[in-house]
Amino acid sequence: MGASTPGGALRKVSELRRELDAFERRQVAHALADGASYASIARDLGLSRQAVHRRFRGALGDEVP
Image 1: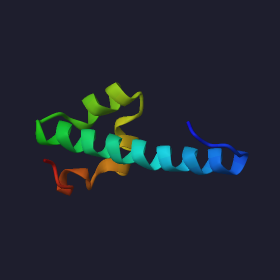
Image 2: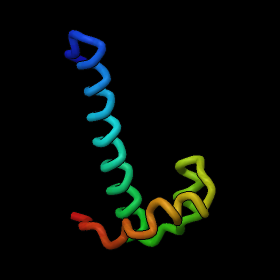
Image 3: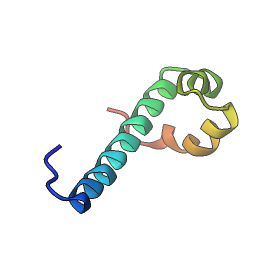
Image 4: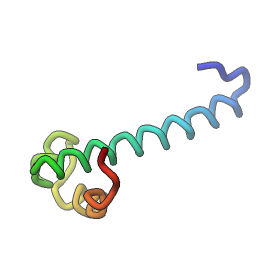
């Protein structure tokens, strides 16, 4: 991954986590825009419907290209 020190590796992990979170949010926004329910998204993510709704309730307002 290109990190030569433990600190550099940890910074890379943090960067990757932010990228993954943003990617997940975009995909949830796409799914909601396509008519998916919070329950179906929750099943796909392996989470409860309540957890998905709480975490992504504003995702539909995000810009979906």
